[in-house]
Length: 324
Length: 259
Image (cartoon, rainbow over all chains, first blue to last red; front, side, top):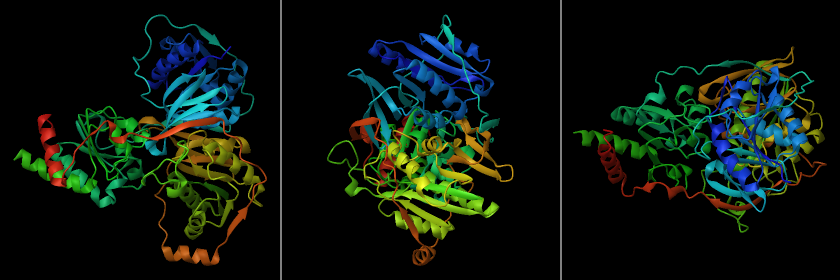
């Protein structure tokens, strides 16, 4: 008898992350495909009421301890390792986010279990889980199978559409005992709110985003001129922020802001999964990159294989002309 | 303070990537390897901590083409000691590479215990493991990743680190030393080092080499097929001179009422 499919609920800072419901939708398909149950694992402290929206699952496995109030990878990994060993699920779906990232590393190491990371899709083939994984900054994909169980699957946001918390009756909750005898070696002291930027990127109708491909900090000016002409703001991908070309508050992506503007111009951005997560739902995406194989072209509506600086400059002029 | 930095070479994804003849991995002949970007930040963070607290920084890497150049550059940046672990098969997955590192580190004389081990929190070729957490687990060390700020209180044997959360939020963690930290970004961008200094390091410096006693762990996943992302599958590609393309985009924006 195959083990069940588990989804790890992402619970932090008082709520369940949206991506959890996406994983439940995917998990339901896999559980049906294998003919097993779908179970969702919820860890927390006095957080049982959060289980109410997890009704897509057949049962909520709930572990409670003060050390589990916020998802620190050390405590989560220990508790999960114990309950996984005891119950032997077939596969565990865990969202790929900054909240769960460390857990995705620690848990398979602790269990000696296979990890399939950056899954954009997961299916069942010959009774085992097979995933489509993103690799090399999203430039390649691979079909990957786990050779054993339990398989740990890191699933990217957007793998399935989700309708949010399930309506209707709360699912049955099964509490399991939690034992954390050792003192924690890593402790979350506090959350620190995002530095307020000078503009709220989520409220902009137009964003001009720059990446490493613009070459030099001086070229940020070309983006600013274009953004001004379009009545929008400038933002950037991770490498540009790390170089100090733009402030942290202007970062789009996994660690930064999620945006859905009417127009998103991606200039010199390759389109690593961490960035795409933050902008893929923009209404119109125009990407400019010298690399015709840049993954950004797989999410863009219009693509231009050129130097981003040249195009930004020409576009600013063309818009000025069009406006008369 | 004794700091160890773990570096790894990964494919340069700015270059064209080609599939190998097995259809399940990259063509190694054509591959250009660069140091994993997050590991460069880990190195920079280590150097910043050394400047503040004194002590030594040792860099350890698995042997790879051009690794000597990378290690000499690290010496030129201010690292005290560089070691490469030899005998790695060319086609290791992340899990294999991490397990070889975990087996090799204890074999390096006068390396462990260290106060702090730093590595990048993510790499371009991560698939079936993350190097940092894997090593932390095997070495019995605490781990926190996605870090963009490290302070150390050596007397109290504590590190205070800032971990990135979604939406620009951070979490302040207190970590017991010795520990392994996965660095997302150093406090400042990795320092530039002039070529002359690298040459000097090649003259006077030494890359230590060791053969690990342990073999890499066998893979737990099977790559069935690898393929290029169909990048242009979605976008309508606009072609012509820069001016023509810009004109076309301006038109499109006008049609959508975006001007």
